[in-house]
Image (tube, rainbow, N blue to C red; front, side, top):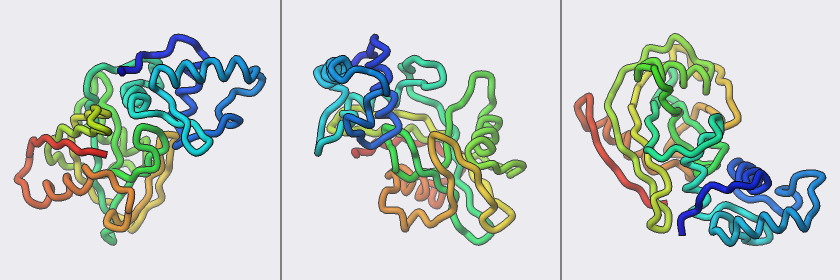
Length: 225
């Protein structure tokens, strides 16, 4: 079953709330002031459509629901039907700690990865990488070097969940662990990727590419979650 975009505003709000949570109980998911029977009707509609499921007394997005929110642009309010083009930043500070990003929204909520973000229309690759670094971390005036591209595909239960073309840049911070900012979609921090049990599998794959391949490289990789 392929989940299609919900038409009713209550169903859209349910999906939006679950986009920023692993799971939510009924009381956490229901908007204030909305009658329980009306809310339950729309929740059941999403469950019948295969987008939401109940587990251990709480509601969460199914694989189809996760696939939907990965293609949904929250800023534009509509679906993206094509693979996303992103800038992916690999950085270390003066003491060798890596710049990491803990995601705060689905489909990979609470997973750790490199700082990254979508290319905007009219930007060059370097402009996009520089902007994403500043927006997500507060770091500016950091020289960035282009290393290559990787088409990354993630599948869950043999269903295509997410696909991005990542343009990879490397940089180095002058100060040891300079202060970082954060935003609603995630939190940047300095750390050791080998110590993160919830590291996204593409992170280690790209690390190996950076260590073994000549620049610029162009590769493809598929990972099952």
